[in-house]
Each structure stands twice: as C-alpha cells, then as structure tokens.
Image (cartoon, rainbow, N blue to C red; front, side):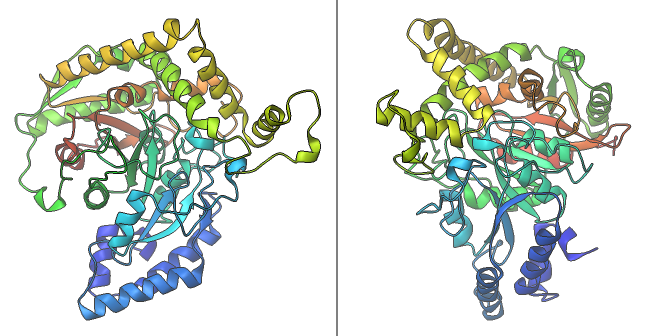
Length: 484
C-alpha cells in the first residue's frame, strides 16, 4: 500500500514507529496534489511553510513531546472555513483574493494539536449547490468515475479524501453538503448535531442550518478529529458545552437490542435509482444477523422537507450575503463604470453583486428576498418555520421509540458533470433525503455500503439522537456492507 493510501490512524502509527517522517509524508502528498487532475483544491500550502511545520512536528516526536494524535498529520479544509495562512474564497469570484485575519475555531483546535492544514478545497459558491459545478474555480471531478460530479457543496473535500490526496477533510453541511458528496464518492461523511462544533470562522450561508462536518475513509479517523474540534467556544452562542466523544470510549459496543426505523415510502420515491433502493435494503436486512431489529416508521414526506428547507435556507442566505456589497470587503466593481441612472452607492452594490456573484447564488438571494418581503413573509417564511418545528417534533418522537433512523443518502448516484447544472429543480432533488435532518438538527452520517451496476458508489444515511455522535459512529463502523 502506498503512503497516500494510509488512513490518518495508520499514518499516526507509522510516524510513531519512525517508518517515515512527517516531512516525507507532507512532501509526498503535496506532490500528489500538484499532479492531480481532480481540481479538488483551490489553495495549497507552499512547500517551504509545510515542511517547516512538518519539521517542527518531527522534532517534537523525537523528543517525546508530541502535541497529540494529529501532530504532523495533513488535513484538508473546505474553502469556506477561515484560515489566516491561506485565502478563503468560498468558491466565489467576489472573495477570490480574500485572506482572513483569523483562524476559525476548528482550525485553532487542529493547530493546537500540531495538525497541518495542507490546503483549502473546492466547493460550490458559498456552499450553494449539490454538484461542485457552481464554483468560480471550475468543477471538481469524482475520483470514482472521472467525468462525473462528486456531489456538493463539499465537492473538493470529498474528492480529496476519496482520491487519496489527504486522509481526512473538513466540509460544511447546510442541507446535505457533507453527506451527499460522501455518498457519491464512496467515503464516510458526518454531519454532527447542530451546535456540536463551533461555527466561528465558517462563512455563513444559512446560519440556523450551517454545520462543520467531517469526511474520511474510516470511522476511527472521523472520531479522532471530532474529539479535538468539537470543543466549547464562547464566540458561537449556539455551540454546546457538552464534552465531545472520546475515541478511547468506543470499545464494547454491540448491535444486540438496537432498533433501526425505516420509512418504506422513501424507497419508492419517484426518481430514486433502483440500485440504491436495492442495496440499501440488503444492507438493512443484514443488520438482523448482528442482532438489530428493523421496524417500519412514518417520516414526514421528503418533498415537504425539501420545500421547507429551500424557503428557510434562501431567506437566511439573502440576509447573510447582504454584506457582499463592494464596500466592506471582497471585490468591487470599477468605479469608472458607474452611470447616473441610480444613486452611486446603489449602483455600486448592483454592479458589484452582478459582476462577482454566480447565477445560483443570485437565484437563491432573489428567492430569499422574495419570501421575506412584506406581504409574503407570513405566507412562506413563517409557514416554513412552522413546518420545520413540526418536522423536528416528529423526528424526536420517532427517536424515542427507535435508536436510529435509516434512509438512502441520495436518491441518485454520481451524475455526469453538466447533466443538471442548467436545471435547478433537478439539482435540488439531490438533497431530497438529507435536508430533513438538517432542519431538525439531528446528527447524521453517510456510510458507503456498495455500488450500482455501473460501479458508482452508494451511501446509506443513519440518523441518531441529539449529541449521540459516539453511538452513531459506533453503529456506522460496524454497519454491514453486503453490496461492496
């Protein structure tokens, strides 16, 4: 096995055994990223800076003063998470040269352990998309099937992990942006409970939905990273004070007596790929042999959740993106192009946003502004909030009777780049099974369980109780994969 195929856990052991140094590891991965055709990265740490950090890690290890599990290990970060050492573009032309003056909370935690942020990964502009095609920096390729989308919006993080450019990566999940690309690239993708991980330093899309998540090739790596980044942060009022789960407590777990709730109608939704329905059912059936019990439940209709999500997310995006006006930060339209048709300030706003924001971002801003307008807010936004609370209550009631809820992660496997980019409604349907649990705030993980007949990866989504990430990760770690 090549060094780039190692998991973070294997790399940690190899570094401790002095099989190779952190400097050798980082140099190898930087060379591999440079040669990659996946377009997974927007910015990459320069070799001199990377080697300096790796050398410091090797020195600490030789003296027995290692800072922790992640000391000297590379981590990729979605480019809507602020880093002081690399620019943060959010995949947008308006922020193409922006460098944050501070690190996000999760970056601070990684650096405290000596982890090396090796690069910033590609994404749909401002995390608005399900295919990675809405990035100003071009689409990301799916390493499992070149020419196909890796999903989105955390397209670059998923492709980097699946393509063995890095062992693990951070993404963000607003309506499925970690889970859906994880499913389409054959890896694990965790969306934690809302509030588990601080959002300080995460560029806002929809604040009541945004969460930082983790993409990895195995559960152990995800658990080790969650343990260090899920720490209390007073700068985020929604961040919990609960202690993050420790990987050391993951032993002595069994499926015996566990109950999985499955909504049968989710496997008969119009547009669901037959191979996905079939493989997911086989995997769920196989849990019987492990001692689990699968029961039928009634989840809210996914179409209702999808409509609710796009009203709320677009409304919050309209508000959050008002700050990109060409005045405070980011790119600005040339002043000499202003005419006298509008007030100078209004025209500067209009021209800046028209010139530097992509079509999908504009579409969602317009939709969000509309549903917040006087005369429409009660009909759309307030009703969507009521529907959200109803969805949350229904899922809480279900999780009082079962340990987990299981659904397909995505109704379709990876699709060809360009296939849906001009049809927003078809693109939005990619989030059909994930948005509900973003609205409710419950933790959810996508697990690779098999492949379609055309060898496209299939993911199954498992949802757990609030702040029960440890239990959810343990279940995912031992979930049967008969379709692989």
